[in-house]
Amino acid sequence: MARDSRPTFFIWTVGCQMNVGDSRRLAESLEARGYRASDRLDSADLLVLNTCVVRQSAEERVLGRLSSLKSFKERRPEALLAVMGCLVGIEPEASDLATRFPYVDHWLPPSAYEALLARLPELPMSSEAAVGPSPVSRYVTIMRGCNNFCSYCIVPYRRGLEHSRPPEEVLEECAELAALGAREITLLGQNVDSYGQDLPGRPTLAELLHRVHEIPGLLRLRFLTNHPKDMSPDLIEAVASLPRVCEHIELPLQSGSDEILRRMNRHYTAEQYLRLVERVRRSIPGVALATDIIVGFPGETRAQFEETYAVLETVGFSAIHVACYSPRQGTAAARLPDDVPAEEKEARRAMVEELLERQSAEANAALLGQSLEVLFEEEVRGKWRGRTRGNALVFCAAEGPLAGRLIDVRITWAGPWSMQGEPAR
Image 1 (cartoon, rainbow, N blue to C red):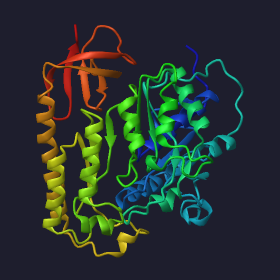
Image 2 (cartoon, rainbow, N blue to C red; image 1 turned 90 degrees about the vertical axis):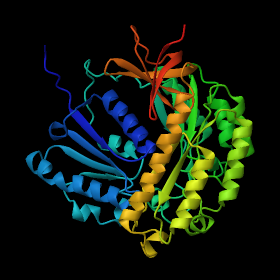
Image 3 (spheres, rainbow, N blue to C red; image 1 turned 90 degrees about the horizontal axis):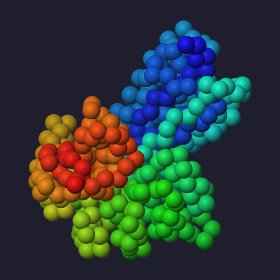
C-alpha cells in the first residue's frame, strides 16, 4: 500500500463547547484542503493549540503545554505552530505572547481559524484527500462574546462584547451540517438569550429556533448557555412547542445566596431564579434542567453556601457543573480577598456532587422499565452510546449500527451517571 504523503495536523483542544466546535470545523477545512489528521502531536506538520483560560488553573495548563513545545520546534523548525482561543484574546498584538514564545508561528483570536487557513500554503489537489463523516451531534456558534461582566469571569475581556451571527449564516451552516449527516445541533453562545440584539431587526433566539427547526434531516435541536435574567417567555414557548427542540435547558445558578449573587454581578435573586424554574417546568413538562455552581466565592460563609445547597435540593437538577472558586487575574473578583480555605471549598464541592449523585440515582431509577427516545452517536466498547432528549447517557447493545438513529429504548439498568437498555419491541 502506498504511503499517504499528505501533510498532517494535530489540534489540541481544551475548554468550552465553542472551542470544540471551532476545532472540528478547522479539522474539516484542513482535510478538505488536503491535510490529514494525525494522532501524534510530535509528528504533525501543523500543530494547533485551541486554548481556554476561563480559570487561572486552565491558563497555567495551557502555558505549560506551550512551553513544552519549544523543544518540538527546535527539533522540527519546519513544522507550523499556531495558537488560538482565549489565551490569545481579541487583540493578539496587544499581548506579550509573541515575545515570550517566539517559536509560535501564528497567534489567532478566539474562533478565528479562517485566518490560519488563509496563511497556509496551497496544496495540489489529491485523490487521497477526504473529509471524514460528520459526527451525529454538532455545535454551531451563533454569537461570540459577552456583555454581562460577571465579576469572576474573564470571557468579556478575552472574547470581547456580544457579536451575533446573521440568521442566514447560521441557517446555512446548520443545513450544511445536516446534509453531511449531523442529526443533532446545539446552538452556542456565552449568553444565547441575548442573540440578535445587536443585529438589524433584532431577531431573537426563539425566532432562530423556529427557522433551524425546519432544516431537512435534523432530528434534534439544543441551545446553551442561558442567563436567568434574560430568558424570555418566547424562548420557553419555542422549547415547549417545537418537537425537535429538546426539553433540556442549561440555566446557571452560580449561587443561591442573594448577597453572593450581588457580588458576582449576576442581576437576579434566588427567588427570581426559582420563579423562572417554576415557569419553565409549568410550560415544559418533564424538562431536564442543568446548572453551574461556584463554591467558595470570596466572602461566602457556610450559611450562604447552605442557601445554595437548599436551592439545589429544591430544584433537583439533572446535571450540576460545580467548581471551586479561584481568583482570575483581570476580573473584578480578583481584587477581593480569596478568604475561603481550600479545604472548605473542596468540602462544599463534594457536598454538591454527593447531592447530584443521590438525586440522579433516584431520578434514573424511576425510569427502569420505561421506554425513552435515544439518539445514538457512536459505539463504545461493544455498546452504542446515545442520549435522551433530556441529555441523559444511555448505552445499548445491538447487532447493527445505530449511529444517527433515533430509537425507543427500554431502560433495563440505571445508575447515577448513565443507563442501559434494549430496543423497545
